[in-house]
Image 1 (cartoon, rainbow, N blue to C red):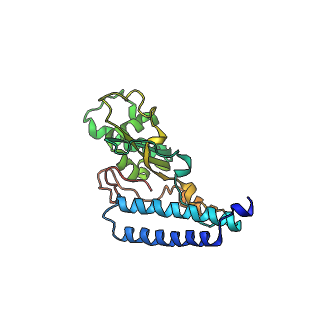
Image 2: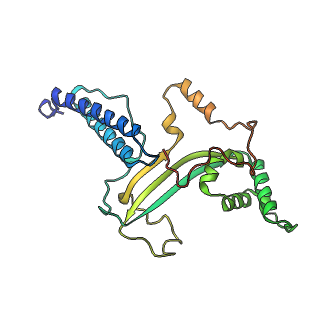
Image 3: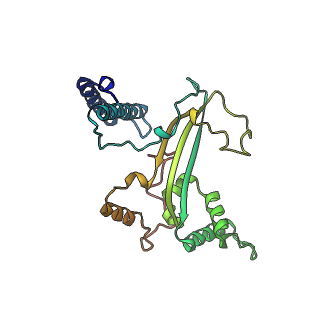
Length: 242
């Protein structure tokens, strides 16, 4: 880049001041938030991320330096929003990945549910004795949010998850998209997106990598609640991924 095209030192300083202002606004919004889905906090977050990006670009163009900050998110992977200005309907698309960490625990929990559901189950019904059958029983019995909050109890380990809120001009007709529910997801209609992944918690150092692995290890000896006990950390319906 030529010297003439480079931003001035004053422009870099102004961008830095904009970051400070956005940071103060974000903190104030968080302090006044009315709940986990407070739109003011979400807006302040986006403004802070945008101000940080501008500052980072000007800093690099002027001084060939970068900031140590990075906002985990999907903004760089999504095209600019091109949906309706005032959507009359929204779709919430959720994906949560799990690994079957303890198949025997999974099978045992499914068998307990099956036994409670059917007082006199058929002797030749072995649905709960297979992993696919056990998963079908548990996900048929419990809401996805309850599975998410009690996954270890069911022998599962969490992987990545994402939640997309997409806009539409009008709601779909009943049964219209059931044959292919995710086929028509348009990235340009995504209003907001929230991702959870272990990759956001990783550090470049080997020491931190080792500690991350230890944190993600499933402890088979950890005590678990029974299905009859309430889950203290159950999520509210339609939890927002962060």
